[in-house]
Length: 256
Ligand code: ZN
Ligand code: FE
Image (cartoon, rainbow, N blue to C red; front, side):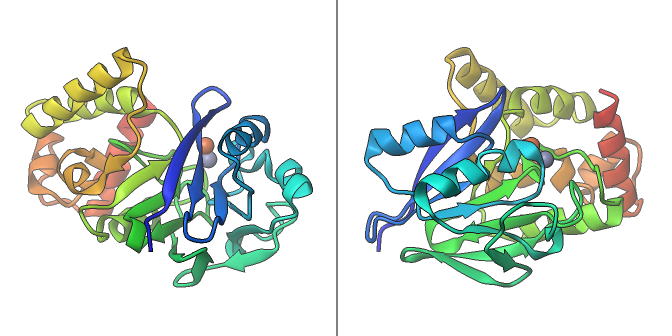
């Protein structure tokens, strides 16, 4: 049983769409198809047939290619039960704790409200892959459009509890600007400085910063560290409630 082969498909201006291919069965899922065109090209180039469309949340830059891909391949759309009515044509509704198989690989569904109220993530444990949409970014997190700080912080804690070896496949290439912000609130963090230098090197070479790795992110991503005394001290909130610390960091990022 081989792990999923995951292909990054850049779309729109800074989205990443993912193909997750199970070599044992030939099943291929697309995660958050922003648009159909680049996905069709990536499938064609590899001779793969699309069998599943997975959505993390209802935003257009994550579902825009759904209908065209479904029309071409006749495959089901799987998405959050809590966003019923907000994503057209969903065939399979999933919620917290559900399992969903792509070939031999099975995702656990994790509800992660905050960016949107019904946002979900798909965790393929045996492939060490997390598809987290706009909830968690490398060195960042999504904007809090629909949620509240305690809920968003709780969502991030659920993702943080996954194994350190988990690879983060997020919805956007926002890493370099996230790094600049992270350094602005946590300038003395040596691990963050090293990660930021590596990110600059990757971007200068025109390479993606995705996937991130969850283990190191626990020490560098400010949004995963609202309960970390060093992070709290760095922003002058020692001993504060973690969700208040999260809210403050999120507010600073919104104004950065
Ligand atoms: Zn979004
Ligand atoms: Fe997005």
